Length: 187
Image (cartoon, rainbow, N blue to C red; front, top):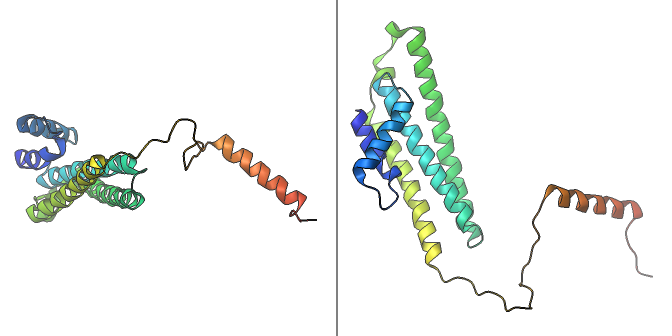
């Protein structure tokens, strides 16, 4: 089952030039880090890895496209949050299985220890879908023609200064001072 889980995770470890065998070994090594003791723990560990990789892909793509397409950026961020929530849910389930196994190993039920292939395939497919979505959106936006650069000497149509805590504090102080003085009137 370890090999099955590692093979299912291999696409998450591929960066285009990687060898599939290397990706499987990397996935297996990461699964070993979770030290699963039952097939169910192995399944949950693999789901956590898949969801985390998909969340990171969506978040990375979101950061890259943020200046090009706001709707895509927000959708990718939503996907990242969704994948992170599923990873958290799988993590809680894994921790519960471990506590149960440590507390009373003789009372473990088959449902708490057996591999659920249907749930595993569904989880991997969902994570792969989000990974593919992030990679596709990123590739599509990178293929678009770059925006023209402004002519030297002319300010860009939209310019913005970097927002920092000190800038926000300064603006807040200015706004508070304006409120104390009262509204401006024309005379």
